[in-house]
Image (cartoon, rainbow, N blue to C red; front, side):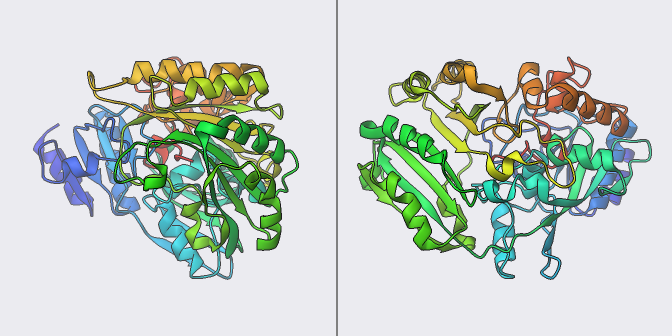
Length: 487
């Protein structure tokens, strides 16, 4: 590629065009997932949809693969060479309070949308971490804080702008009327179809919730917390979305003194009903005892990040997950999973299980590609990954995760796209998008990207190498700037 081609690209882009060694290149490559980072030959720091179109057109003319990154929470296997489109500067938000919708550009993060919507007494169907990209999260499905009441984030998507890999590199406005098949695939199917530059989503008339965390001494009551919570979910109303997280806390000054060095069992609640009813519902959980922190309260939805209190510092990590049927974890499986992921594990594990069902289980008015709506629980495990010689590497983490999830095999119905971080196998891809869903998405990829520009996709791995299976990055890495959301 010569200087003339690069000069032409720079002239067409409102943002920046960077090469390795240029000032700003490293910063644009960096994302929340610090274990690896993209190393493109050309990086386009886009500020407009036209910038994205220019970048994809450039890649197509020169036969280069394309990857995209916004916040980078869900980075899979990083791209080497090719063109990287950084959408982190595309942060426009437009709220239509009358229609109860928001238009968000590809780089908007959940926390910013929550704050802006709250100014209009509205709320998005966001996940647990405020730094996650709104667009990529929805493209992967979106397991949200209020999901049992309102469904997947993908269910509330109304319109999408996407630059596809077709011959004229069009910027398409995709709705249920304009292109029903692509609209179906983009909502929950992730990527491989193009680069999404913006999205219109429905907002919810939610101003306050009752929720937060109950933090227990997991060294004493981890199994009781998980057993009691799972039984409790069997009669939980749809207005209540909840989860359990188990993790060891380091003994460092940055951690509150009362929690340092402890193994924690946390229950997270988000309830759209009254404070009085929320207090009543929480009684069986508080009765477990060994409570270290009780943060349950009525709160403005703008403070919803406190429900999970997830870390906001970039770090290196990998994860795995399975979706479970209504049987969840029986006693033997529960004990085995907790033992494999517990404080004595040679790999530090964050173990989580989220309650699905309710509106998660119902198809939306306009069908989309979210699979496994029969799942009742989402079980996942996440671990930090160290540099070689400094701690557990990716292979050790993968082996531990397989061991953690294996006892639940009898109740597994599939996998979820939003909780996959790191390279994934074809078997995992097929478990996320099974049968005809996967086949339909593959046909759609071929139509929208006939030359295979967007190779860094989960479906690419499942296709057996047709789309550079070695790259193996989850689908949303192409569609919206990162893997399909971190929630």
